[in-house]
Image (tube, rainbow, N blue to C red):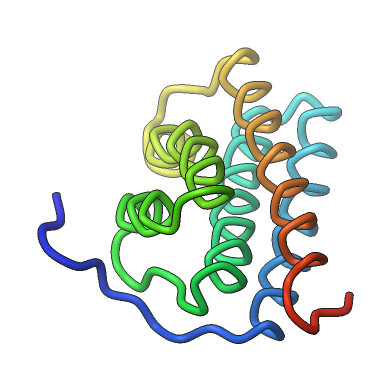
Length: 139
């Protein structure tokens, strides 16, 4: 568990738009995988969609993204407050599924995959709203 200030790096409005584009691509892959019954791929892509969407939110609201562990990113968002806190809640639903989807031999359940895709959808929608209402960002 991290202590003190989380490591961050500066992020621009252009970075936020790029993170949002990545989040949307991962989300489409997660949704397509879910449709095909590929629960592990759906979950993994949903997690990556959520991470990219979280970076988009942080880039707009704080001008910086977390550079440490993914758990640090949730703390960074939480510290931002407002929409950052909402994003942190969704990201915290996704992060525990990352290890199982990517490294554990146990298959993802349909419920886990659906929960991941739903959390990613919420997070990407939030990121799109934040990015599009942010300063000088076009998509």
